[in-house]
Picture 1: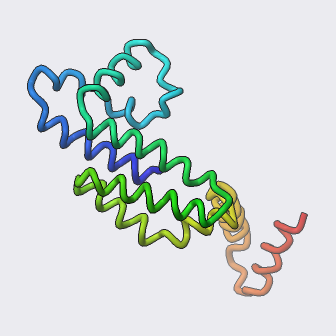
Picture 2 (picture 1 turned 135 degrees about the vertical axis):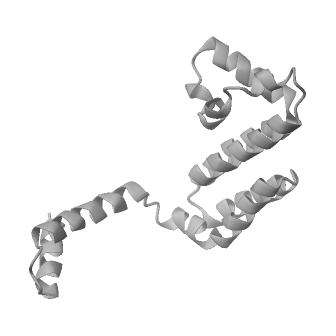
Length: 161
């Protein structure tokens, strides 16, 4: 999703450059409005600006629809349904014919196996980051010990409870 956020920003920039002078005012300050979840846009002025921007530009509107559909892929527990949804998403994204979006589609297709594995093993990176941090702390405390077996035992001990 973070990578798609960068794609959204590239699309916004390219559409801003194509826009007429009077429409450019709508694009100003819209970067974070496009990156936020729609339900988190609370200010009335921001909601109005987002509404105007989406009505003004079909490409940005399509990218926002793609963002919502992409989030939905991570909720599937069936690889078959997730695969079909991913294929449909990639087809829809390719129809934009925007180089940044097309590049993102190629990246998704390269990582398809891992994305679909999320259905069987819904592990989020937060837990992995926590484990890595704990191992780094053990490594810092064990500085000077040259015994790899002892280090391994300390890691097992840290995660045994």
